[in-house]
Image 1 (tube, helix red, strand yellow):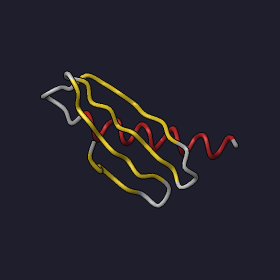
Image 2 (cartoon, rainbow, N blue to C red):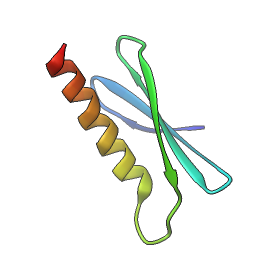
Image 3 (cartoon, rainbow, N blue to C red):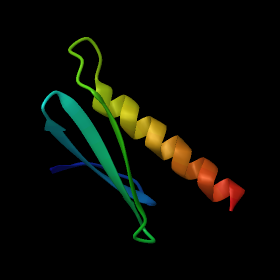
Length: 64
C-alpha cells in the first residue's frame, strides 16, 4: 500500500492485488472506507476511484 493522494479532509492509499486496485481512504476523524475496481490499461482507475470516494465523502458530510 502506498500513499496516493491527500486533501485537507482525507488521505488516500492505493494498492493493487491480483488485478484489482483498491483505494483506501482515511478521514481527519479516523473514519476509513475503500473502493475497488478491476485494473484497466485504457484509463487511470485510481484517479477515478479517488474522485468517486471524495464525492461520496462530501455527500456524507452534507447529509450529517
